Amino acid sequence: MLELIDITKRFKKTEAVKNMNMYIQKGEIVGLLGPNGAGKSTAISILSSLAEPTSGEVNFQHKSIIKDPQELRKIIGIVPQEIALYEDLSAEENMKFFGRIYRLKGKKLEKKVTEVLEQIGLSNRRKDIVKTFSGGMKRRLNIGVAMLHDPEILVMDEPTVGIDPQSRNYILQTVKRLNQERQMTVLYTSHYMEEVEFLCDRIYIMDKGNLIASGTKNEIKQILSSENTITLKADHWTHEFIDKLEKNPVIHQMRVEDHEITLVVSREVSIFSELAKLAEKTHITLTAVDVKIVTLEDVFLHLTGRALRD
Ligand SMILES: Nc1ncnc2c1ncn2[C@@H]1O[C@H](COP(=O)(O)OP(=O)(O)O)[C@@H](O)[C@H]1O
Ligand SMILES: [Mg+2]
Image 1 (tube, helix red, strand yellow):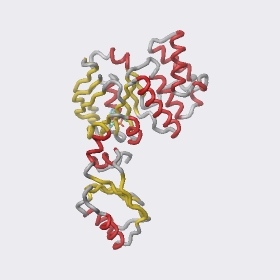
Image 2: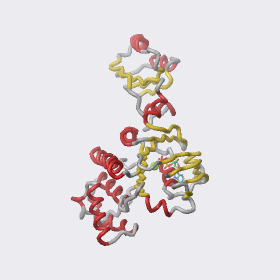
Image 3: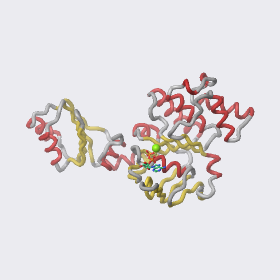
Image 4: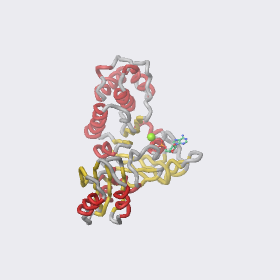
C-alpha cells in the first residue's frame, strides 16, 4: 500500500535516515521502534508526504507521492509528536476547525465530531476548553483530530509520551479497536517496546538513522533464539565481580546498574553455578537470579549494546 525505497534524509550535519526500506500493507498495525533521535519522526514525515527525502522514493499504491501527494493526503491521518491544538477553544471547536480543513461541514461535520469524541472517550468534555484538559486528554483529542476524515491509514508519532497510564491504556485499546473493527491501517511510532509488542503485527527497529531489524515479533525475537538474558540482583557490586564477568567469553553483552546486572549469554551454556561461585568468592550476596523471556528490548540491547531508553 505504502512504501519507502532506499530513503536517505540529510540535514546539514546529520544523516537522520540512511537507506531505509519499509512497507505497510492494508489492515496491519506496523510498529516503528527506536530511542530518541533514531530518525523515526523524520522517516514517518517522509512517508506521510510532509517532508521530502534527500534521495530515494516513496510509493503509494505503486505511484510516487514525492511529486504528487494528493491521493495519499486524502486517506492519511497524521498524529504529530507535538500536540497541535488551540488551547483557548473547546474540544468541539477544535474538531470543527480541523474538520473544515478537511472540507467537512454542516450535519456531516457535526455527526463526525460526535462519533470521534465518542471513540476517544471525550464526549462528556465536548464543550470544555482544551486548556483545562490533562495531558492524556489533549493527546486523545490530538488523535481525534487526525481521525475526522475517516483516514484509511493512521500515522501516530509517539502518541503516549508523558501521559498517565490510564490514558495510555485507553489510547492503546482505541488503536487496537480501530484496527479490528474498521480495518484501519496503523503506523505506530514509539520508544516503548511494550507498546509496540502489544499492538503491532510487524515491527521495524531503528537506531541512529539505520534500520537494525524488521519482521514479525517472532521473527525479530528469533534473532536471540540462541541466547538467554540473565538478570542478577544484589545490594552492591565489586570491581572484581564485574571484571570477571567482563572477561567471561560466554557473556556477549552486559549492562551494569546500581543493583542489577543484565547478561546476554549463549543459550546452550549453563552459567549458573559459575555465577554463584564467582559471587561467593568476591563477597557478593545475590538477592535474585532471573532468566528472562526474550523481549524486543533484549533484541535492541543485543543489536546495539544499549538499552532503548538510555
Ligand atoms: N529539521 C531538522 N534539522 C536538523 N536536524 C534534524 C531535523 N529534524 C531532525 N533532525 C535530527 O535528525 C535526527 C533524527 O531525529 P528524529 O527523526 O526526530 O528522531 P526520533 O523521532 O526517532 O526521535 C536527530 O539527530 C535530530 O536532531
Ligand atoms: Mg520523534
